[in-house]
Every structure is written in C-alpha cells, then in structure tokens.
Image 1 (cartoon, rainbow, N blue to C red):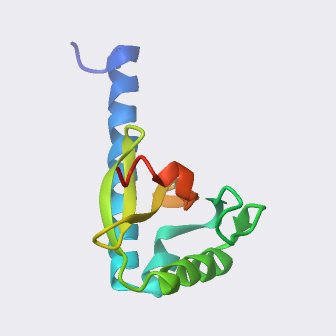
Image 2 (cartoon, rainbow, N blue to C red; image 1 turned 180 degrees about the horizontal axis):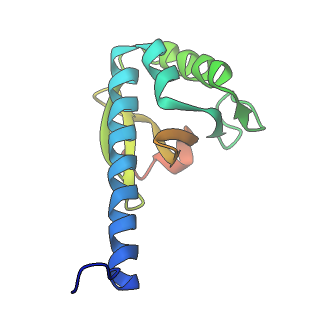
Amino acid sequence: MTLGRRAPWPLRARAAAQAEARRQRIAVRALAYACDERDFSRIVRVLHPDAVLVIDSGGRVPAPLDPVGGRARIVDMLVRFLDTHPEAVAVECPVNGEPGIALHTGQDIVGVLTVGVRAERISRLWLVVNPDKLRAWNA
C-alpha cells in the first residue's frame, strides 16, 4: 500500500468493528466491577446521559413494564435489584456472542445483563431476570 491511500473498505470495516467490540468489553468490565463493588457513583460514570434500561421480568418478577431512562433512575433500579440479592456477584461472560454480565449468587444466576455502547459509555442496558429465560443459565 502506498502512502496517502486508504485501506480497502473490508479492512476499515473490520478495524471499526474491532474498536467497537473493545469499547464494549471495557464498558462491560467497568459496569461489572461497579456492580460487584456496589459502587453506584461509578455506575453513574459509565452510563451515557441518555442511557435506557429495559428489564425483562416476564411478569414473574416485579419490574417496570416500560424502559427506564436517565442515569439516576437506572442506578436506582440496579440498586434495588442488587439489594434484593446482596450475595450476588457480577461476572463478565459472553451473552449471545457479545460481552455481558451474569449476576450469580454462587448457586443461581439471578440476572443477565447486556449493554450497548455509544460515545464510550453504556447507552442501553438489557437486564433479564425472567426465571423462565434464566433456567437455561442455571441448568
């Protein structure tokens, strides 16, 4: 390749995808650490100001039906969830091929969290607490 010439499109696309995957892994690691340490000010720092949390409870666990927006409300929801499972530990793990977090008590997975990242911060969180969907994790 000569100087001044751009890399072919597939190489640029692959580099962009790798950079995005790296940002997502870093954000997941920071969120897992903050949840594990119950460091709620750190959770606020890793969230994008326009972040949204969706909780899939399947109607089997008390949770809001609508998405929860805003960092303060998201942290409040995460605090409530973690308070109901004080022994839960946040562990990074792949979820559907993407970086994610399993919240486990040592015996059971009580929640699975995946994220979307925008501008180096977490902008979307999906927390699955539906016992039916967690059954496969606990098998």
